[in-house]
Amino acid sequence: MRATVLNSASIMLDRILIDRRVDALAPELAEVARDLHAHPELRFEEHRSAGALVARLEAHGVTVERGLAGMPTSFRARAGEGGARVAILAEYDALPEIGHACGHNLIAAGALGAFLALARDGVTLPGTVELIGTPAEEGGGGKALLLDAGAFAGVDAAMMFHPFDRDLLMHTALANVWLEMTFHGVPSHAAIAPWDGASALTACLETFRLVDSQRVHFRDGVRVHGFVTNGGQAVNIIPERAACEMSVRATTDAELARVRAIVERCARGAALACGVEVGIVARRGYRSMNNNATLARRFGANLEALGRTPRERDASVGAGSTDMGDVSQVVPAIHPWLAICGEGAATCHQRAFADAAVAEPGIAAMLVAAKTMARTALDVLEDEGLRAAMKAEFEASR
Image (cartoon, rainbow, N blue to C red; front, side, top):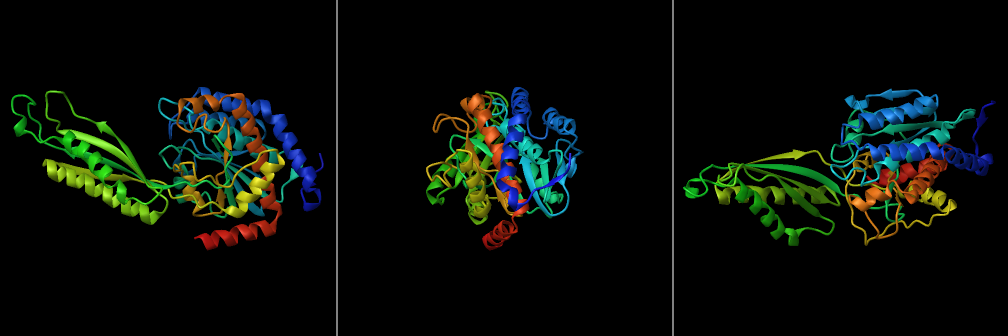
């Protein structure tokens, strides 16, 4: 087939061809989404999921690079050559116990569909599109590790979509850090000589109470939550060891640092009051999402052309954290949300949301996302003015 160069004179035709290509891939993409959903894998352990996605790419004649940033479950595929570069990101890790209750199976299938719609035979792209498989979004920060390894160097735009209960173009994502706190006390028989012991568990629980007492001083948007990971060794022993993990989130890096210091003071104060020691280890978290409004609105226009009516934001909706925030601080990026269920019916990390991630409305939303990302990626490759506006906004936002 003779290669066809995509240009501004054939924009409408190109978009129709993209949509038809995704429609032709629909049975395969639905199968991918359902397969990943049926075989959930935790962060950094997504060997089967990454392998399934790579196998699909190779079946379409696409060469795949595996093991980026030293992560066996990461990968990258490319279509086109030279020109502007757009990265479409796939997530595919799941959660403990509740599987794909964040809908990453749909994220992966949608990204695969968008890439294959652009990487079709007989078409010469006006630039380069990349599909990057990003492990461990659920607490592992795979995208941050890919950034450290230079995987996004030279990329003009990065995009993905996330399932939700409503369509949003520029939703907030909070900066966060995880704090692992381990308390060391003195054991003693809890009945014979409790006065000889120093309870690590008491200090651990007191930390939660002290943090609660400080919430009145947190700025809007701050979230601090955690759970006890070690509550003691036996019921008749004053606990020698106890531990908890806390997630600290805020809308800005500065507020995150301030609140983190408060939480750490609470832990040290509780340890001092209880006569025990505490060790605090910070695990790298995520940066806040710097939504590129120029790119998000182009995505929104393409989404509207496909019959959806997205809102830019919704202040009534809470915010979480994502390592896409790290990417957005380095290149112009978007992380739009698309409804896979009725508004208010379910949300991320709920069992009902896991069910929605494999139901027909979820599959349909994934196909719309694939078309919209492919359309928007082509816009970026073709439109120098769009790229300039994205870059100017990005530089100003930094």
